[in-house]
Image (cartoon, rainbow, N blue to C red; front, side):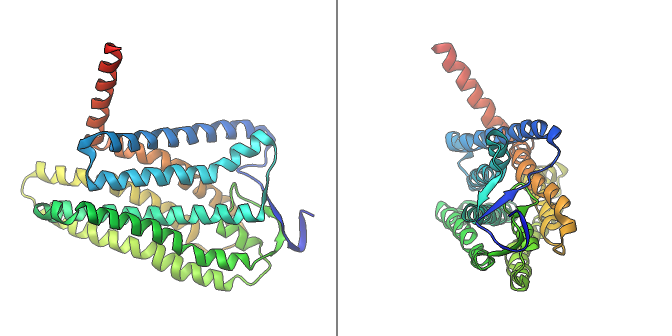
Length: 316
């Protein structure tokens, strides 16, 4: 049965972005285009960082990890829409739903942590430029990277453990385009107070607020240092080096705030879909554009590789 008062579910039905049949083809084509742009743009950034020696710096090392995260998170969330349209099957097993939620959760946590690491990198580069290469050495970059990946994987586990105890649901129809925490909490007929408290404590304080505070403190010192630069050209150059990162931080935190840091109710489903779509589709597309269009090093690396490719074709 699709809807009963209380149901122990073995599978969920994903409603998708819209119920309107006439919009399904348009939605599929738009999602496919967004998905390909996200994969293509982040792959280009990743290849440039790997192949161009001038981008072998801590900032771009973290950016490469951010590109990998964007590719994974887009695949985890948008593949449902593509698969449902191609196969006509919008069923997902309980185990698959929980796995999807876990991977999406730890990827979002990782993105927040890597953006924090990037803000620390910018702080050292602008506030302590003479000590930059000594502080941001290869060993520290690797430690920060491993810590970000591991913390992201661990932080989501308490949510999954609690969710595994919620096998009783009022319905197995998820009004979303992927398995997410809020829609399942709305559907659950179990007591979700512990999970809500965990969301406010660990989710808000540890996963969201603490990285935000660390970024905020970093940018207070960064802006303070920039304002002390006497040359207007020097100030513009210094701010330009962190403007891309700051833009990405503002976009991500804005969507996460409206998506999760609100009271849980069924009335928030439509708006959650919108913010989830922006978070999982638009941001992974915008990140490569922001870092390529607003970053001279990336643009220069792209030009060098295109010239090299042109010379190689001429020789061949």
